[in-house]
Length: 214
Ligand code: ATP
Image: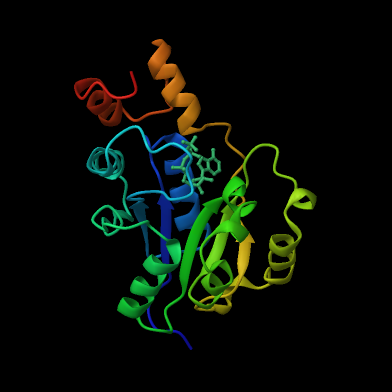
């Protein structure tokens, strides 16, 4: 028995938030019948060699602008205001404490993040707090996952996801892989190339207004 509809969380640098993030968030919500998906911009991503290019507040503002007209998506600003490295485990512990032990909780990551999951702080504790959905990226190959991650990935997929498990399962999203990254978008912006539909209009306007990624 679980209480409450399933809640989805999607953490990222969002530097800037782009069309693949939005498609992922929407597919995540509809495929898993989630009540709500909360996007969680990271404060100080500890696992990045180079810091983000836009400030935490600017990245938060761009997420707000991007989801303003999209039903079922919300923003959670807690990591932006945390003055220490943003570990996913800390965020999940906080949110789990807020929603109680029974409500199904899903955390969304991309396939490249899955391949690095074993480097996340206390990664094996994540499964006691949430389920994990994975949006596969172009080139994803299960056999290239580090063994510890591949073992979890194979063992935690269940045939019936309607069981409403509060945590502990893993599944891929059926969304076709999207060849879009924030890195490629920053490069396009810097070189003056067109970003087409990769950014939503209010986000592009914000980037221009604040002269970001030049
Ligand atoms: P960067 O190019 O700066 O590394 P990014 O586009 O990968 O950025 P993040 O904000 O770091 O974006 O991504 C947040 C999460 O979304 C990560 O788990 C990442 O793997 C995932 N993600 C981003 N773009 C895609 C995509 N095109 N397909 C699948 N997952 C994606």
